[in-house]
Image (cartoon, rainbow, N blue to C red):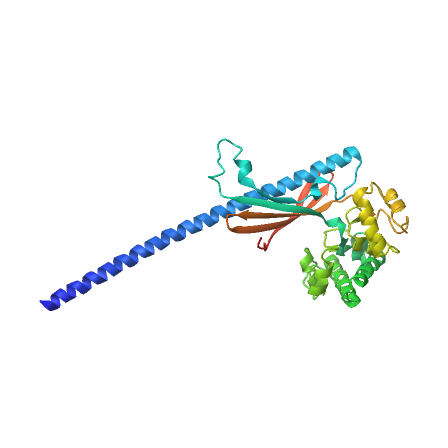
Length: 324
């Protein structure tokens, strides 16, 4: 009898343990499903907000182009597109709608900025294309190589890396022109970080980041937005000290056209500042949008090409967001 009672007690204990295990597993599954649903909802919300931010940036650039067309003004750092958006709480705007309440909405904060990428020297300018069809030819652009050489010297970077990068870029361009099959040449970079494919070291990339970019076609340097280093490198005879003075002067009175810029930049001439190498207007802009949604940080970077009143997104990418 005692053995039967012991067996019954043990069976009861096993049954309770089994029921508790099943209940815990069911609770965990329910919790996991809720977490997955919340994460997916948060991902969709973030995606829509960032798309809206990008469309907002495109609208700003389009209206800026319209204003410039009407006034004949140039692109410069005093325009609305160049003003960063400080972190703003989106729910406060949504709560303006009587159907929404700020207390009921998930806290979402948006910040961002736009950068004129034609304020930097374009790596693709190093290779010059000539001819069409079977007569097409790629070669190193001597004036642009000279500009990059001056920039490397100014930043105390190894000339050997520049020579290797230009050589690899030319080789890859020629390969892309003549033979689509795989080759031993590096891929053509599409983003700044991919310049390491051409042989540039991390130290060199870090030093060049504020002055060099990668754009999908040959571009001019905007004299209104370029850094003092980029100005000095692109205009032979303009040392860094004078370039810094030019940057200070244009902040007060931007250049309206190349003729006026030549007159105001020390040592500049129609030979060193031409419509093929410089401009006071830009077509390529980088948009960075940073979203803080609850406890999640999401950052996106996009390249926008502006042609007249048309704006086109060339690429978008998520980047690691730094903690606030």
